[in-house]
Image 1: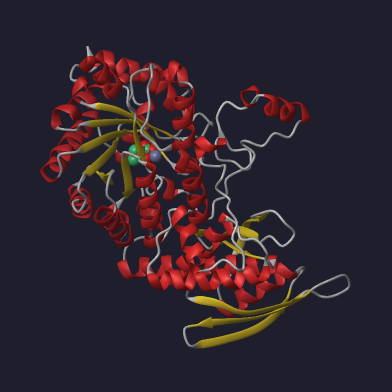
Image 2: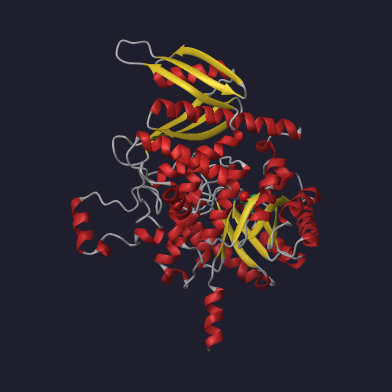
Length: 528
Ligand code: KIV
Ligand code: ZN
């Protein structure tokens, strides 16, 4: 009896496969450098995800190195890499993930009629053979092989069932059903998963996973419908980051299962939910993609009660208006304050509390930046600490550094900026006018670097309370065909804007340099 209970609890466990580093990073402008990817992978392991998809090793040498670095350094979760069903991809993927204690090769191949006809120009029989050959080849390198029939939700159900059966026979132990273009609706997607359990004879030999995109805003709902129909693995990303409108948001799926287990046959995940908020903020900082204030679970307003009647209710009994506790997500009690008199020890202690690991040299640099900031503002909050650390991470890719900025602006004045930049040993200085102080500063930077960016988004947010708070500027800039995002913070918002813009320029130059070094098409062009 006891064994039976244990078994059924285990069979209801939902594997959380995090693809923030792969699909999430494919989000336009969300690229991360290797150092940042490693930092995030450690935090994902700390969150207790089951699988980390660390990248697409064949996409670029940089992707390969990042997957390899994660495989070498991150313990706990399975480390997966993505590959098309072609030998070269699979070999490259195997070379990157083989360093992990637990590794997985995730092969994919489009199966829908539209992809077969227009993209691959192959018949069903050829697709079937490619999938089987790819899985068999991947099994030569790795026991754990996952197969994704890309665009599964638009694939003819009979052909889908046929290829799933063949994939399991060929050795795939996870079959992932992607709603690649976010076209499915929950009732239909749930039925699709249920029908696979009914029609595929060897289905019990594999775990059925799903991977839903959010084009119609249904990624989480579709993933949950799949769980209700037997799926026990979900591919998702922190903050729902991902291609186009993104992927299913990990934090939403996990908290739905935690809050409403009775609606999901007791399905559960092993995620340490009290770490969700911290990881969400880390992803936002690393990618420069802000989380909307009213975003479920991790948005700034998710637990804010504005209406008087709600506040009154919450004070009398919290559960009148709160279905989850902020501390379950790690929101409360996180914002301890440091100040100018806090010593090195307190500073290090708070970084450790936030799960930030730095080398002795990085710690010293971060501490110096902390002292400089504490001189300008009274209270240093967690978000300020994240900023300080992020500034250090940018160092490795910092080609241009802002050394001096002076702007004159005001009613009846022509806004003018004087900028001094350092590039290696070179010191560059110039001045320009604009239609405001930010415009003047960015135009001056354009003149000095010779790279002209077009600002797609500009967001300014105070990152803590008080008038002396740092302003965080998040921007997205288009440079020709490339779109890059970055953030920077300062108590001076024009300086924050100039530094965020310069971070974009530096990021762009690094990406272009790597693409040149590889003498291969750009990362984006090679991605699936
Ligand atoms: O959206 C998709 O189909 C994918 C596959 C590679 C799993 O990302
Ligand atoms: Zn995807």
